Length: 100
Image (tube, rainbow, N blue to C red; front, side, top):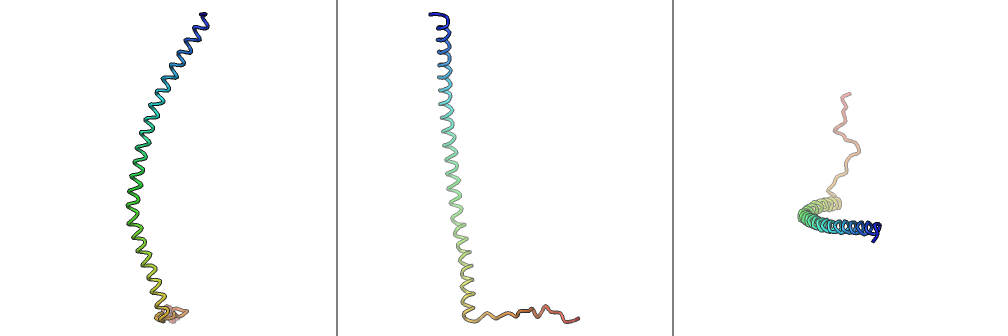
């Protein structure tokens, strides 16, 4: 073998070895990323479940408030039909000051 062939073979062996070592390190990094993403996914699932459990009573509370609001409208409509509401005068007579 000539000198250029020996140098070419040595450089090919070195580059192959470096690529092999980098590949193994890349596999370890990808395993670590997979583990980290699994932990993050579990944390997000836990937070999602907690928020859902907290929001259910809040939804019920807001439904009760909406029911009170609608019942007030119904009472106003019924009292309007029965004639219980009195028409208001166009001018506030009590606020008028005639001491001039």
